[in-house]
Length: 231
Image 1: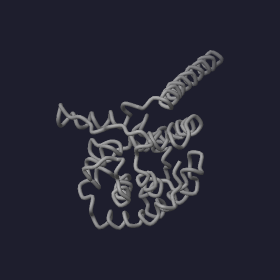
Image 2 (image 1 turned 90 degrees about the vertical axis):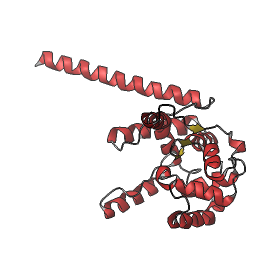
Image 3 (image 1 turned 60 degrees about the vertical axis):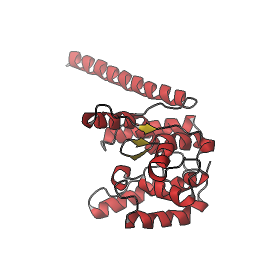
Image 4 (image 1 turned 90 degrees about the horizontal axis):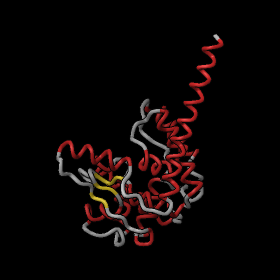
């Protein structure tokens, strides 16, 4: 028994060391991307792999735009639609999470999420769309890293440049060209609101971006976006 306990302790120590090394790897990238724009993300790699299975020559549509060149309307619309407490919270909207849990419990299935922009960015940069407890736990740790080491402006800048906006479409610049034949700098209020309401399910909504549901949501966000606080 003593011999077994010895090996159990050694095994636990190795496991803890591996976990710490993984977290150090994430932390290193978070520190690097504080100053350097990401060329790709975990989500981009995943989607590109899926596209190449159908078309070996497939490429993603993605072009970086610095924060100051992104439409103020888009910044307001995305905050209004996705995370209206973005400026004030430290990575987690506990009230939003509680409301989402209650709504999901009432429906008996997952119909709402309480993820903040910071949490979504953590997932997009490093993780997958799986809903395992491990993934959610790792997402929370990376979210804390982002909120500690980056300011809100940098979090929003990177988010708007890497978030998925359609099949193979990533970032505001590619989305603006895809749906409106314009740049992310020149987006008007209604265009920005429509892009914002597509974010929860962009590959599904891109099939009919002017559906009655999206039209209604767009008008709702238009009414909210001018109250959104932008970093």
